[in-house]
Length: 157
Image (cartoon, rainbow, N blue to C red; front, side, top):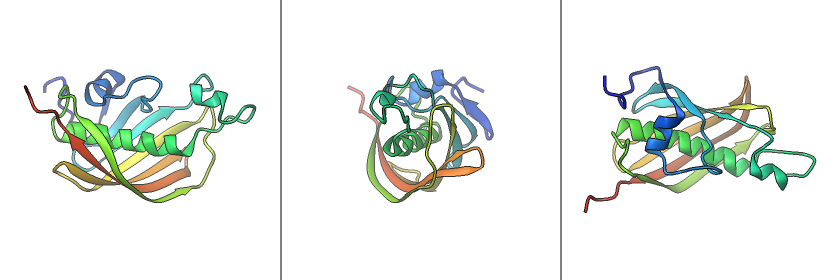
């Protein structure tokens, strides 16, 4: 097994995540990915901490993790799944949202929460993929959505 090969049920640590996604602090929103089933599903983990910059303004005295960042964290988790499924490690791929549908927020996410970002591929295999995502805190649903993304790999010079 090479260092970038992931078999069913394995994990991706932050070093592998950064070899797939272009995002960096403060906008890298996935700490690790577990329960990876290539081409199918995975679970991203985001530990929400008070020292993150969005909490200085969202909201002073009542820190709530922004809903759009929950959706972005689900999308980044799906980007890791696609990166592993399509062998995009170290290929400088970019990911672009094409659509977000059926978003529902069910619970506030606050510092101290651990977000589990469950993503399932509904359609994929080429450049355009569609996913169902559920963000959970423990056994409580925080957010759900379907989203579509396009993956673009730069051509070699």
